[in-house]
Every structure is written in structure tokens, then in C-alpha cells.
Image (tube, rainbow, N blue to C red):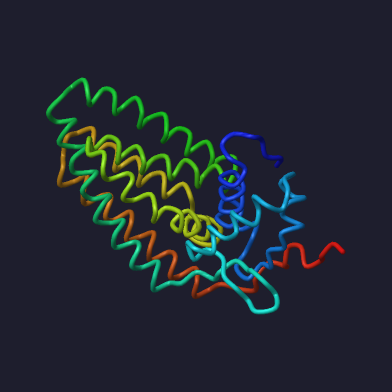
Length: 236
């Protein structure tokens, strides 16, 4: 995947590496060599260096002594903490979205159109077996719920956690529950929102998040060997 000029090369490099960490292409403990990554993405070392610094600041990559930087292993305790925060935000968003649909047929109709498109795209990604697309559509679904809530503070507040949760999604999608079941849960959340049932919408989205957290814990308990390192060579 070659990168283009807009948005900034640093942002593109960050997103490219985060995406490949999320989908498992760059597994835990993968050695990250600037020269190899620069060649991989078709850019100079400078944006790669800056993107790696940002990923390190976020705790997504870490120092490994003389080896340099590696993809950080998942920290289950930290992920449980992030899931708790996400559960609170998503529950609030689902409840507010349902209340807005109950109060306005126009909002309900618009929410239905948007939600149906995302659910259809997610089901199609599952049918294609495309992990990266499944993650993107899953993120899109929850961003849609945040937007449907009508509270513009929820999305930005949740965004910082999604940098990590995208990776968790990839882990869960690769190792545990059938992805189709996840999109059935999304369908049930959407149906409750469209029905204007705030209590049911909140309950459904909390069940969905708690199930995802439990699947992550199970998948980490059963994890095997990491994938081979990417780029353990260096240019002279």
C-alpha cells in the first residue's frame, strides 16, 4: 500500500501501521525497523519515525532494548479498563439515540437509512472474510451510534480508546466468536434504537460490549506463538 500526500504522511503512516497492528499483520512483539517500514509504505524514514513516536506515546509500540521498537503486547488489565469506559459511553449514546428516534420520525428515518447501510456493509465484509473491512465497519457502526445520540462530545471522548479497541477487535475477529454473531448483535442494537426503546438499546449495547471483552480474555488465554518478525534486516 503506497501512501499519498494528503492527509499528512505522518498521519497516513500512523494509520497504516495501526491498521496492520489491528488486523494482525504486525503481531505482538514484531520488530519495527524504520527502513523496512519506509520501503513498505513508499515514504521516507522521517514520517515513519514520527509515526512510531506517536504509536509509542499511545502505548501501542514499546522499546525492546537493543532491538529497538516492537509492537506492544495487549495489556488485558488496561483493555478491561478501556472497555468499562467504552461501555459507559456507548450505553449513553444508544439511550440518547433511541430517545431521539422516539421523539422524531424524521430522525428515526434518517437513522434507519444510515444504520442499515453500515449493517449491510458489515455483513458483506464478514462474507468476504476481510478482517480489515470488518474492523472498519465495526468502528463505523459505533461512530454512527455516537452521532445518532445527538451529543457531539461522545464521539471525540471515545476516539482515544478506539485506537486500542481496533486492535482488540482484530484479535477477537481472528481467534474467537463467529463475526456473523457480532453483526447480529449490531442489528439488535439498531432495532432497539429505531424502536425508540432506550432501555433496550442500552441493554443490548452493554451485552455486546461485555461479550466482546469476554471473548478477548478467552482469546488471549488461548493465544499461541506470535507471527514472525517483520524486517529484522537493516540497510547499511
